[in-house]
Length: 477
Ligand code: NDP
View 1 (cartoon, rainbow, N blue to C red):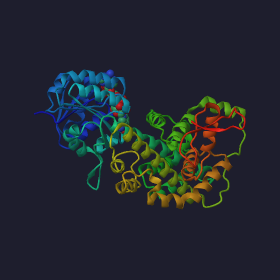
View 2 (tube, rainbow, N blue to C red):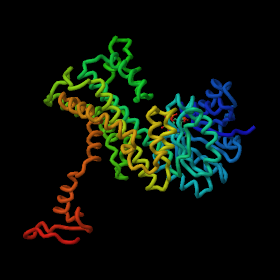
View 3 (cartoon, rainbow, N blue to C red):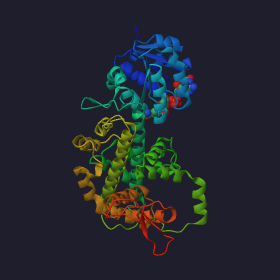
View 4 (cartoon, rainbow, N blue to C red):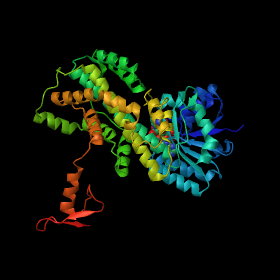
């Protein structure tokens, strides 16, 4: 008997993916650099399905039916290259190497091009949902050739999360498209988490509510339009009491947020593409600020002045207003993330269907939410939508939220509570709707010091003002 699929790299993620395939009735070839993991998997979970364990790469490859489908689930970066170098010579034309780790999309593009030359398919695929998702059904974002998806897609769809029976897995696009979309998914996740944290902070510091009371507020919100996995787990975390001290769990955790890097990658890629993903950027920077212990200590020692953030006033219903601010800011963050996907799709010729991305994020992944249905509908209606904010549902939501949103940003500023996510989302929104932006002045400054030229509102062409000359005449540039 040969295996339909193989997994090499059997740490938490690889092991759970292998089990997921086996539980769905597929025969799974399993391999790991050190054999003990392979052995453990078969000993502990062998009863869940049919595993074909191999100690050597050669035996592993030989245990697979053709075209071979080999999922690599090892540490991203150098280890992935090492594994590719080990397996590529053992494979034959038409076989597939599938990297399901968190690779950078540019690495995926490089690997795909190199393996294509050797007649192999390389599929860089995003997998979201952590260990639990890998076992019970992740959201899967495969890139690579159309041909590879024909041979691989049905297997991936089988183990993916489902919404009303529809798989949370779709062919995203060629080469790096899958890993790019997974990266932006993570960037959006950063923004979502930061916005939720700001909402909590305002309810705690301005509203004077306890973490447990705020947990109840989040539980309530989870029943409404904000309903999502992240809101749900936020309530769980806020309800948690530290067993050792009896204090709220959030009060015994060091307030320095860490990051593994996909948020940062999203922002770096956005800078290169020229797409303003301010919501994601603010969330990456907010984590960096929180982690800057030395700078924070210096600021505390210097006693940087400002209002002390104790329970205070808010002109309006704080809880209802924060819900509106959270929803509107979230819309902005998603709009920016989707715009980045569209920009990259154009840049690299990926032809990504943005609505399909919203569809496969509705279950299995960290940002799963009811809200994604509306994003899917918006792009299904008009795939070329320049921004989600002009879709009627989102336009109505944001226009309904904006008074509250402004009040919340004012309250945060007045009480000295940092709310960079809410504030920058609002600034982005106001920037988009502005009839005239001060960018005109920036063009003037650029022309003054660098003769960079400018365009006029009243006629075509490029112009330059001779700033140093008498009367500063304008010339065609
Ligand atoms: P790790 O990232 O901890 O990697 C451990 C695995 O990599 C082990 O199987 C290890 O083998 C193998 N490995 C490391 N270096 C090499 C090498 N040079 N050659 C061969 N094998 C090597 O495992 P995880 O399961 O946590 O994650 C796997 C991938 O999935 C990563 O890319 C990670 O970023 C991603 N990931 C994704 C998540 C998601 O939600 N999508 C969540 C967590 C991770 P050995 O046992 O011999 O040491």
